[in-house]
Length: 266
Image (cartoon, rainbow, N blue to C red; front, side, top):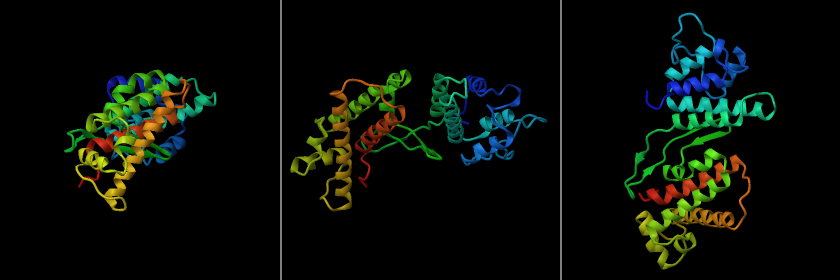
């Protein structure tokens, strides 16, 4: 099965999750089942995740069976959930697992859950197609163009510059399509904006129509990126909350995606 865990990934996760001796973290059989149940996964479903061990049905063996048989998106969702679980314990001083180990788990989850993107007919740019939801956590793929540019900042925990740089990528994309980098110069209500709409989406339409409202919506989104970026540029770099940064980066990814694939052009 494509994009499943490598031997290196499994070895790392087994060490972090304390799977030696058949255990997984501090889970009991009941809490182990309940945890995966909240992710809509029946971890003890032997038909879906057959256990290769002829005798043991321990939590560790059940998790290994899951890793060997589940779909990549299920595995990614489970690892992400486990990362959030151990991070909560870490923050409460109830776990020796480090922040770096939690981030490594998240990195593995993101990599495993990444599917091959489909190709867009507009501008010949790949589109983002996958997202998984577990409770109040949404795991999405951001545009590869953005991720590749900000990966070093994410890896080092420099979320302020990760956000700032993600918005620069959107600006450069807008510039490459329209010749203008400011959203305020591209999305406005004059004749010049009609030309830019044609360049980006292949059509234009009047405000008050469904397609016209879509154009305005994308315009407001691009304006948000422009002004949020301006705020970052004119502010001293500070420590930025990881969760907030991811929301900002997701906004950049959506903005980039909409102007790159001409969504709504049909």
